[in-house]
Each structure stands twice: as structure tokens, then as C-alpha cells.
Image 1 (tube, one colour):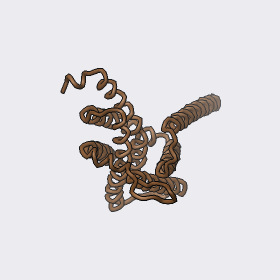
Image 2 (cartoon, rainbow, N blue to C red):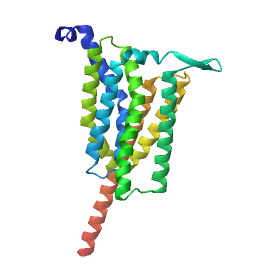
Image 3 (cartoon, rainbow, N blue to C red):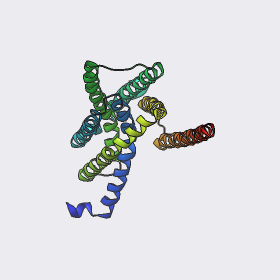
Image 4 (cartoon, rainbow, N blue to C red):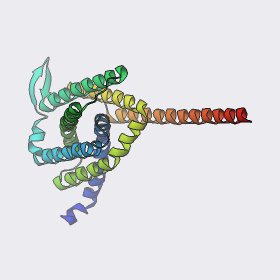
Length: 252
């Protein structure tokens, strides 16, 4: 087994797959971070771990059922001469779910709706886990099908999935903390999730947009947001300095 992993082709596949799984997991981390941010701070670590663990179990489970996964790409029926496969139906359902969730969250944020109270907290915790699992189901299918194109070794794919999930576990909290400290990034994240939902629906109808475009848009948007945050910090610091100098002048 070790000899097989140390083969140059398998090592290259493992590295490529691990990086790919991490990149494909970015949208999952953003979605989980936004959902978890609505929970009490003491419940957030547990929700993050449970959500990402569920994603790991799903991906490994789909890997074990790889023959069934491959059948999802076979057309089930046609609509206006367009073949619709099981994967297309999953992408369509996932895209519509993501669009609905993003729009309702944006509406909630704009309207300032708050979820408080013990009963709501308990139910929202369960909903966070269920919604995370639902989204992980969609992304896991896409992830496994992509992984099959890069490697034929089940063990290589399994190790890549486990390592990438470990990386996501490490970075899930920093991402969540960043979103909590900078509320405008939550709106940006929701807008990006809406974009991903639209792309999933488009992919369901065989309108394929290269994922590189999507991740470039995400990276560019995050860069702009980081620059905005730095600009706001400098403006706040300058305002405090001027206010402090004015107070000192008044006391003299």
C-alpha cells in the first residue's frame, strides 16, 4: 500500500486531489460559517465539527459506492431533446436550494430579523446540521465525480478527502470569526452562494461555466472586501486620533 502511494503518479494525483478538494470545499465552509454564525457562540464549534464530519462521511460513503455515482451521469429522460441525468437533478435541486437559502438570508439580514429564545435556538441548531448535510450531499457528488477524473485509486481519493476535511476543520473557525467580526463579509458570502446556486442550476442544463471563473470571482470579491475593511480601519483610527487631539486641546 505504501509503495503504491509513493509512486510518482499517485503522489501527484494525491497532491492535485487534496488541493482540488480544499478549493471545492471553500463554498461549503462559507455556507457552514454563515449558518453557524446564527447559533450561540458556545454551540458553534460543535455545529462546525458535526457539519464537516457529516460531509466527510458522505464523501467517503459515495467513494465506497463509486459505481453507483458513475451511473448518475447516465441520462434518465429527455426534456426538449436535452438529456437529464441523476447528477443533473441533484445539481438542479442543490442550486435551487442554495439560491432560496441565500435570498432568504439576505432578506433576513436586510430586514434585521432576529432569532432568539431557547426553543428557536434548539430548532435552529438542528436546522443548521440538516441544511449543512443537504448541501454537503450535493457538493460531495460533484467532488467525487471530479476526483474520479484525476485518479483511479480509491485509497488516493480517500486520503485526499480526509486531508482536505482536516484542513477545512482548521480553517472553519477563522473563517467564521472573520465573518462575525466583519458583518459586510456575510452579505458578500451570501451573494457568492447565490452565484454558486445559479451556476449549479446552469450546470444541470449542461451550461458549463469553468470553475476557474467562479473561484476567480470569489478571490477578487474577497480582495476588494479586505481592502474595504483596511480602509475602514484606517478611517476609524484617523477619526479617533483627531477626536483624541481635540479632547486634549480642550483640556489645556
